[in-house]
Image 1: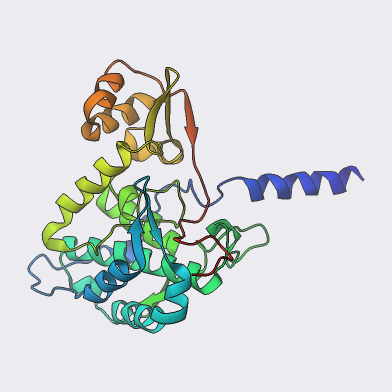
Image 2 (image 1 turned 180 degrees about the vertical axis):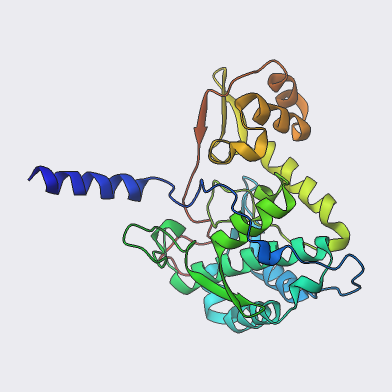
Length: 279
C-alpha cells in the first residue's frame, strides 16, 4: 500500500508541475550555421493571414485564438504554411531571418496542436509527448526541418534560447495559455524584428499577468522564475530586466524593489471560444 501511495503521489506531483517549463539551455550545434550575406527572405504572409482572420485581443488585452474555426476552415492553409517552413533551408538564412523562422514555426505548430485537439482546456492536457510521465506536446516531434525532426522544446530550449541568448525569446514564443505573453498579432519578420520583440516585451511586462503590485506585494509571471537564468539569474536581475520595459507607475514601484513576493501563471487555453462551445 505504501508503494502504491508513493507512486500516486509521484504521478500527481509530476502532472501538476510545469514539467516542460524549466529546461535549461542545451545548444543544438546543428542549427548554428547561418549566412550573414544571404538575401533570402522567407514569406510569412500566410501566417499573417491566419492571425488576422482567427485571432483578436479581448477586453483585457489578451490575444485569443479561434482554434475551432482554424480546425474547420483554415487547417489546410496552416498545414501548407508549416510545410513551406519545413522545406526552407534555414541554415542558409541570416540570423534575423532565422529567429523569425523559428519563432513563427513554434507558434504555428502550437496553434495547430491546439486546433487538432480542440476543444481542450489547457495545452498541458494534449499529452502527445513520449515518456510515461510526460505532459503536453512539447517533447513530440511536430515538424521536420532540413530532414531533421524537431520538437517545441528543441526550438525553444536548444535553438532560440542558446543561440540568441536574448530574454525576449520568452515574449516571442506562445504556449497557448492565458498566462503566456500574447501570441504576436502578426508574423515576426527580419526587417522589424527588434521593434516587434521590444513591443512584445512592453506589452507583457505592463500587463497584470506579467507584473503587478497587489496589496503592496510584487507579483510576477512564473516565467521569470522558471527561466530566471535568462533574466540575470536572480530576483534582482529579473527586476532589472523588468525596468527596461516597465512604464508609468509600475516603473516607479519597481525601482524601489529588490525581491519578488510571489509568482503566478494561468495555464487555461487562450481560446476565443470556450472549449466545447460553438465557434
